[in-house]
Length: 484
Ligand SMILES: [Zn+2]
Image (cartoon, rainbow, N blue to C red; front, top):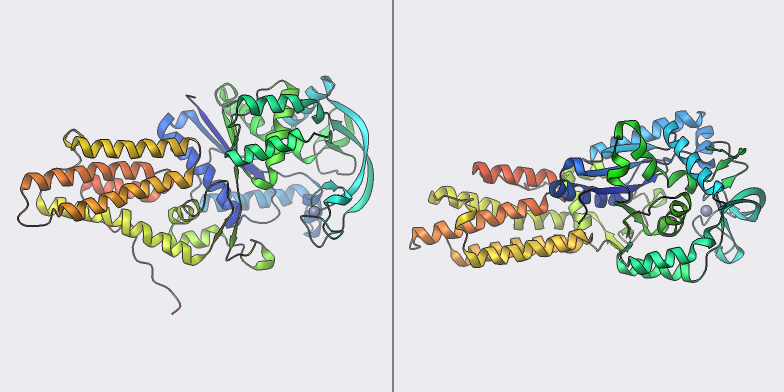
């Protein structure tokens, strides 16, 4: 087992503020970071997020607002940080690719591949979508429009570029996937990536002649480094910053990249090849998540459903918003979400965990019995609890967050059933039986609090304190609907 854990989100392109869909990605990473901080210690866990600040789209957006690109990205990077702070994100650092230290690292990385003969001069022509900053072939287009931008018509463009010999790394990648079948998680995405590489790889342009807002190519300063060759190295550049002395040795290559399915190719194919070319180890895992719709509609401005996660958190609490998403569908799958489901999830927590806590504390105080004595738990009860907790651990360590949450749900369901069967409130129960049942339950509850902590950190802290102090609290108070 690794002693250290490093988790990253993609660095986001700051042309707006993050919405609930973006937040889903960071919630996954945050949950994993919190789990490993609990397990390995704070000093052995590192969680990185940030913003990807170069490129033609940024320059264009800045110009439209009468700002310099730097002013523009400063403003939006601050907005991102505000939102993440507002939803209690526990990242250890926020990387910005306009940080000169990152820029220098990206230059050094591409220089290493150039020196190895993996970067060569060529020209590129194709159908270029300005919004994607990407070229397409005729076959990629949908009714003549960009596959990602249904209103944009990609334009035929030709320019001088430098190419990265991605094709050279086909065997390396296939060996990597064969040796480490869980390099890409979950398995269905590993199979998808392997299929893409087996089908053959083409060299890709990694510099741009006509984008000024970018990092200059060290061996040809007329060109700038193309988006991915600038963005992806953030995962490594940060670890080399002076304030993170020793982090490169500690956190590379134990990196876990949490990415949406739209950028899987860049993380699971290009990035390991870039690293190999420049003489670095490849990361531990690439975790791929799906997307969700809201009431069946894609999230976006046009559907007016790009909800600010802070608005939901203000009403339901940070914890419940992330719980609702993570408990609704499996990480690698797509799903659907809406406010009614969020309310159902809130009730679910109130009725299971919240109710259990209230009952155990109330009865323990009422019956004046000792609780939270781990030495006095019934052996059979303890074995069952430990088995379920082990199942949770197995799930969360392969990043099956949905399944891990289901397991905690099973524990609380069992506990509420157990309390109904034991009926510790009945007058004719022997004091020994009552004491035993309530002690069993209190130890179970402490475990539930611990297992929920990575997902619902604020609630878990409250529940832990209430149990220790034997204070009766309402963990999930009733929420009044504003409009009737
Ligand atoms: Zn496009």
